[in-house]
Image (cartoon, rainbow, N blue to C red):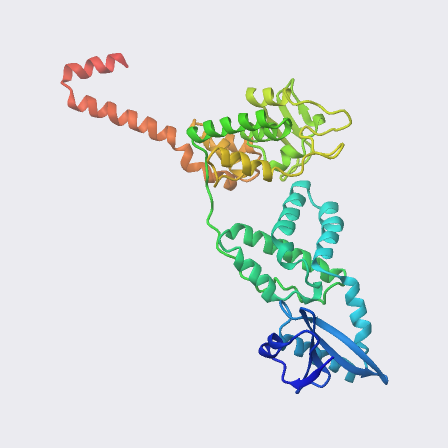
Length: 397
């Protein structure tokens, strides 16, 4: 393999042709070679009299010429201190990629210890947003710049950007605890979150009508009734997505029109069933051997995610900005607009803190505004009438 000496820079690396190798002029044994297309940074040195080769990494994210040179100096420092970096390298090789860490984290930490609804959220954020960008990196290679770049790319959806940042931070903290990263090296630590504006998206009567048509069309097109039934239950009960997907037939009491959930985000909870919700539940077929109301594709298991069918349904309804959780907000907003008190709305939604329900306070003023308008109109009419007409108006009341 032809070789030459030069200070290794991006320009030198870009100019490399297949079969060439360049040795760095400044750091002895540090080189870059091109085999076919990939250009790989290497280090050649001696340990205890034996020549050893270290593959630092392939040129490209995260390995630049400067970063590879720094890594070469680190390895040489280990050698000078009479430590064998080959042993350390082999140990790190066992750690593997971020993709492997994600699988292990989901299995051992998330699925085993978190609520099913939270586990679904973690899995979605990691698999949909994090893995495509970070999956091939080694766990110990992930740096602040990698996380910051991912966070920045999601800037148009600040809520998702901040949620994936929080989940990644939790995962890397766990990686430290199990020895896959050094302590206090969490790459998420100094990434600043985006400001989030409180979102209030409620469906109007016209939008609810369009959603109803889209649900009917989806039900006619696809044989499975569980997807549409789940969405209808979310609309009619104001329940959380995780509560409906984890619902078991043993929790359903149709005689008393109530769902008795043994566990939820706020602990044990009762969800009251109105007539449309009861009708929806009564129409759902029960699968033998599956205790769940909303059955999934796997035998005996519930449906785990509504994301894909929901995207299709909301597109058909012309509601591209509506999230599944907005169905819960819509349930509350219609109750508030109809005159239900905040205490009643909080009870229906299972809120444990009144502050959580206060987001609907401005909606509960609608009946008050209507009454105020009626009073004002009556007073105005009286003031414009003759005294005799006022007497007649008062007698009518």
